[in-house]
Length: 454
Ligand SMILES: Cc1cc2nc3c(=O)[nH]c(=O)nc-3n(C[C@H](O)[C@H](O)[C@H](O)COP(=O)(O)OP(=O)(O)OC[C@H]3O[C@@H](n4cnc5c(N)ncnc54)[C@H](O)[C@@H]3O)c2cc1C
Image (cartoon, rainbow, N blue to C red):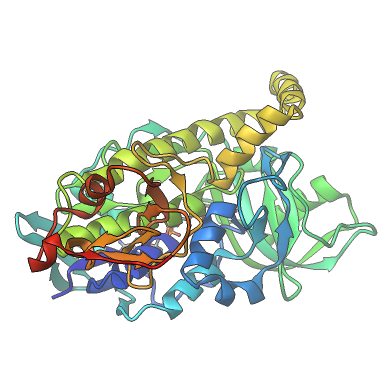
């Protein structure tokens, strides 16, 4: 019996499984689709996600597929310089989401069972029973990472308050049969936040269109090549002609968030927990960062050494982060409306974002580097432990925590959580910090300390 079932093999579910497995937890991933998807909604990785992937040795497998390194993000199409951000990676990586998911999946030992849509969930004090693809599986816990239309959310009747979509856009991957002279063939930030054309690999282009036609059409109407072609001509002039429509979908500005990320033995992450307009490249990044926050906490709970409240701190820490992204994307959505009032506000905001302090505050938010949690001192540059333990640098580690914390030499004392957050930086209080984040002392070696040379 696995310790944890993860519903959904999107980037959030796979990253959660990776984090759990790193910490020695048995995982089973159940995925609705019969094959790994080659369709990528997201194309942008923000600096904090790049840090997390690099620290886990996952970036090397993604790098061959990187389409662009952009030294800036954007706020509804208003460029936001990233070059002075406090990170090893002061840029967005343009890479297709499917490549990120494939890189994580390639490193999993856990089975990913496909063609296994979750259709029933039951839970009791001892665990969960999840029915998928006609089979029932029992585990201690369920992580619901089954996307914006989460079946688990529906099955549990979990409240998902927020607002429905008021405007609609289409996303499509196409080949072009004809291109106007001067069409930019390199990656550029969108200029409005409500439409763009970007080159992918292999002669494919990503198109996003949000014009009047999309507002008239039903949300469930299939996207046709003719509709995409009209959108392209409207944006780029008559010289552009669509070749093949490879993949298309519609999306909108619905913004919703679960009231609680934990429902007993079920924890929600990624789009299953929050949806919003995908402007500014935030959703995939939120999901990866939810996974990294949840993984080590749930692993500690499974292995029986989680301090009281640790698992609930997943909701406490991550809910406000997504709530803030909803505020940001709602504001960006308004700035993209082609209406004289919104255009006036956009002009003012563009001016404000030229001010260094305002630009930096927004850059820190978009990049994911501004994330701060109560009791946490900031991000640490320390590489994470290979086996999911915390890391103590430059101080003697009491032997009673050696099963949960790795000791390393180094000049500057610091204690780092498995998700890369600094929780002690020298002085008194090391034992308190160890107890708070890693649980009580255990074992006969409670009195000993592993000595380190620095
Ligand atoms: C047009 C567009 C552009 C975007 N651009 C960006 C961007 O540049 N940067 C960014 O950060 N974000 C972007 N996003 C958002 C990003 O794509 C999502 O936030 C991201 O896919 C969330 O990942 P996830 O794993 O939580 O959910 P998903 O990617 O939706 O994965 C959920 C998985 O669960 C599976 N599933 C569904 N139902 C079941 C079930 N019943 N049982 C089992 N499995 C199930 C699905 O098949 C899927 O594999 C964009 C979104 C859109 C629509």
